[in-house]
Length: 333
Image 1 (cartoon, rainbow, N blue to C red):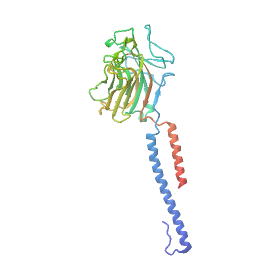
Image 2: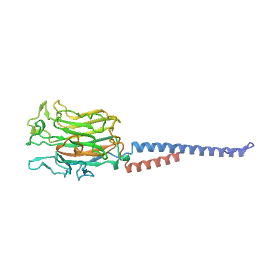
Image 3: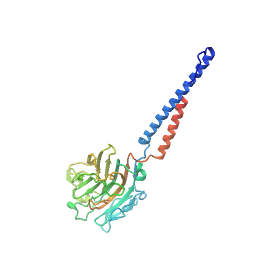
Image 4: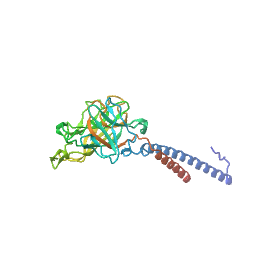
């Protein structure tokens, strides 16, 4: 502590007062810088966790598999086929039945073979896993006439037990949206929940209507893309919103986004790591809950999560901004 002296007076006293004021100013400036540094650290942490995240991942398959691989997870797993742009595949050879033009992935499934594409998300997630995400994929539903023998004499088997799944590492169980022609519906099921596994669906919505009447002949059904989407705790933690988009009119006149489930995520998982999600699967079901029978193609997959790792560019920009802010404040001080 600076000692002014009991007998200081006149010029000596003035000099001491100036020195004291400079000392106090330096001390106050240091305290301000300390407070500023603390605030900036907090702001940086908040920005890194909230603002400097990676953009949503997406795949359009225009130039190949784009990091996806053909699953070998099931005993009947087989490779599917990447369909190049401007190629229209004959999905049932010798029958003159064609699918949608590429680029996309053809994921055939039947009682003897299951084609499923998988993507490993773990390198893109903080800690290699997440329990909050938004994922969606387009699925082409083909009309298979003149073939017959399908449930309810439909003009095909839709995407029977073929769809969009999000899974944890080392397991084929997770959450998924898939089709069931025996119910004329798309279905959502959370296989991780320690409950009775209720299947959420809207029966008969996949039947194609126009003006309140079934479209006739049924050779005019489908041959269209639908979109499957799972919001698992992404918009609201602890809540799931699962829906799909269909471009035709259902029996009740509804079209567009059809909600299969909107409500709480069942709180208890039957295994502690089942909700450590780290993989996406599209195509044939690879667990034992149902047998796929599908000639569907998949495209335009999107995945987003608050647990995506920050982009390097975002971190560099954030660091430079903080350095500039510190410099500006110090100059003003």
